[in-house]
Image (tube, rainbow, N blue to C red; front, side, top):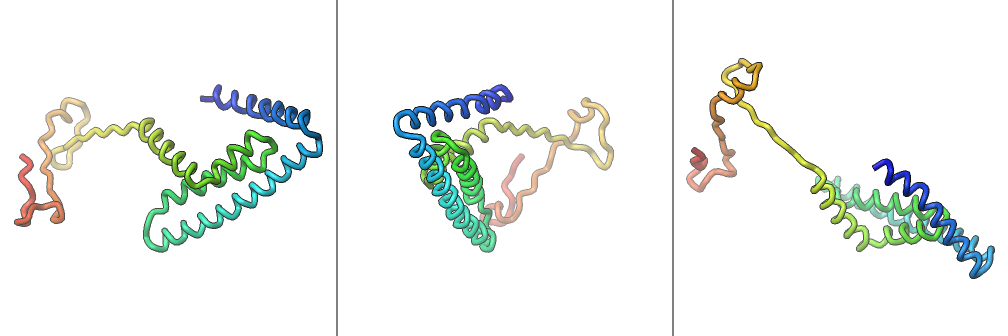
Length: 166
């Protein structure tokens, strides 16, 4: 992971330098500087406006008692877009502007959520103990009595009795 980050830290500025040099050679220095300044100014303003809009949506969701998970993800991506847009360069501007498009953010959010779910492994180990004594070795944990499951009333059947789980 550290190698990938180091590679990006080295390669991205190098690619940006090559792209800016190519733009300068094909147009002029003034055009290159104006493109970098305009994309930075316009991009930062767009990111600011979208960020304020998402900030209002977060407040509306929390006031309604809902968890604003999608809005928070949008806010993080807009923050990243702003960082990319104020960084001088053509490649980072493309990435930044693409993160300001709601459809791109939504798709990227789905991709990131799926990636995170695949990378996250949750393992549960349940143990039961008799009375208030706690076993000190694995053998006594395996010999622990079975667990009695009580189903809350909202999961009970129509008669009001919990289902038979034995």
